[in-house]
Length: 448
Image 1 (cartoon, helix red, strand yellow):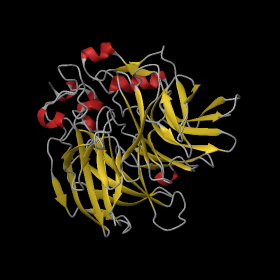
Image 2 (cartoon, one colour):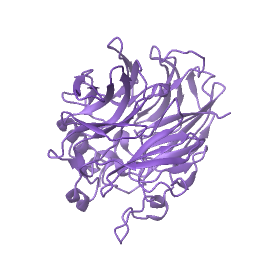
Image 3 (cartoon, helix red, strand yellow):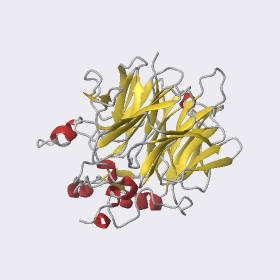
């Protein structure tokens, strides 16, 4: 098979790298802020040489890490997450048709909670990894976690708790979980949905959990032929659900059919109002992305122009009258720009916030929701998710800090550091190898 015959997700900016390596004293252009003392780690699919996973989302997870300290970039290293699927080829679906949730790719996100670092993928258990990116092993929180774990848990900045969920192709289709600030799984409950929805993300506010029950669902025909077993289903419907954190029933609200991979944030307003900001896909834009992520006959998942008509755009749902008989949902497109990977200052998770950052092909975008303004930074290469690192000063403004983005190109990769206030580049760390375009990263400041 020639390079041009390979599926889109195995060539170009998405092509996997063949080796694990490390390098020290990386070259830096500009000046790294001395306040950045810690590790930047990013996850993404990187199938081994010769392996075709059948879909971009299914490649083996590889972590890419950069250690910053004292204005220096001390090291870079990349490591596969050594799941049981990676090390022994363990099947996700066993011969007796039971599921092995440890046999997953662990390829989507990486988070730290209660001092432990986890590589995440939404169809299985989290994998604990150490500070040097070595794999510790699958984690089920002392046997209490009996479902998969989303790759997009939400840390409550007020309580320190971690809210998350698991979905599956068999009942229970959706289960809500909560970890204490100390890392103990303290609560689980089934959330009733009508079928096996593919729920990639969700939201929290100060008092609520917000569900996105949308029309991409498990498809046994797709499952039988391999690859990703989910597809768009017009008959499923689309709705948002609001569930009190303190306990109680979910109230569901119908919305126009769409799909959401990533939420920016959600918050409450006085008078029983919940606002959700997310990147919304129409059916057309979802199916264009989905086909590009699983075959070579269509544009790849990163190839839509930044201003593509009917592309994924930042969108707002305003749910009014919660707790009354006069409930209603207003929908609003916040911008025309085709974007993905929305991020925020995580200290504002579930709370009113002014800024959302996103990626538009080769640009990093900053939305000022209060002014309706948009600022853009041209990366000159494929811009990765912009991870916000807050300034440490007490009383710092919401956008006082830095953005870290792994910028990929055909000839190499750089970790860019931007001043988040004005999107000015302050430093760039040259990495020793090409890094495939991937998914989500995290800044891990050194622990006391």
